[in-house]
Image (cartoon, rainbow, N blue to C red):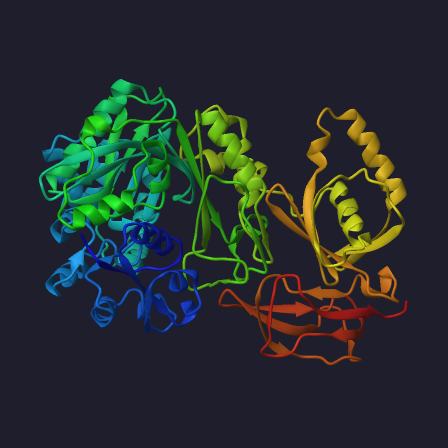
Length: 633
């Protein structure tokens, strides 16, 4: 058995691998960049080695530094996790040539599945069904257009070296084909350095079904059943579940057998995923499920497979890499219940899913059965790496029970001031179509704005914020209170510089009357806390900030001219000073965020009554930067 293991990754997957390795008595070594010096995975490992500057290209993606770190720490093996170098055949080969154990498939297996066209040709030879299309070497626009016409519209253009949703274009008509082909090739060149493409028939009701496979060095290959990853946004998976809804035993048997054939065709060792696209227009049928690609690594969504099978896939990886056979035979594996996973991302759905970064001043996950994360309260979400904060996983006796559990977990998640998609996830899980398993990869796009939580809080939350403002506890957290408790007086609150006075007595009476008309009064329970001169509320996974009027000043005095940071960032220029006269639209300061400059201007003519921002300062979202007092008249 491996005695010491270096994890060539970061974040939640590094923490996940460390947990299993520790349980097996294996010493763990973490690697970290400058940005990750205080990261959770660094502190959880037995030892940590610095590998370079913050950008991944200068640290986590430099194979020579990873191998040097393993030698420095005396590690016996390297586990790549997923992403970064996990599917880099050259790195895998270098690890083996350095005399280290590679916890992953053979380099030749990675190469065989690395290019989509070659992989599809190989699968055809192995008797694995593939999507109708064109894989030829003639890449001239004329030949590709002719092949697209023969396949029938719509068709999908895919970069052969693509991945992560890049290098893909759907084309509905012949007149758009050349334009879309050129666009696809430009993106493929920029992302993968390879302009070759293949063509596939566009599936009208596609479901993304994948099968977990596992091989060892003794010639054994098993499957651990399927997962459904159809809920995607811009080709990125959002919610995954196992088993696939609507999958009958006969179809499952044929699908999983095809996945095992695919793995055997490349002499596969370790954990891998064979991905299929299903035409679900008439339900899941074996003759309408086609091979897409094989991911030669552990998948992000592997916890749902672990939940329904009771298997620790990382433990299997380490045992197989140590030369042991797969711990269980195919007949020993069975499905128990249903599991579902949601990816919690640092992004703002109300602003077009703009990435959100910064310090996690408040972090509380809802009641999931399993939370996989690489961050903690007080930590930082960096713009340099993947924006996933955590994976929330729930398991139930059936699909409905699992959905209800994950809905509670996402709706009960509280993160501030970093924005997340928790409210978006909760709405997706609670959508009638999702509950009825009316799924395909276009689900989120069709649902549209219905899945986006409101940018502005409903009226009831203003009252909740006012109640917290009146609490004697001051800065302490307050959770699970009711809206119809006895009020005491009025309070002035604002959002985005607009303030209003709330009479608690009148508002409470209105809420009490509304509750009397509702069967479920519990629907009006939220959580929140006071943070200095702000109230932070959480409702169904979405965070809202309310500002308290400054003592000694009225709502109008503090209100309309408040200049707030639209997102976390760095103040790079301040053009005014307190007391300056400004005109409407005049630039006051410049905020740099997400590698872009954002000019913040005066909303009207007046005087700079307050200026809290200074050049070089890092600020959080909705921080008060300046306040303009409107000129008389």
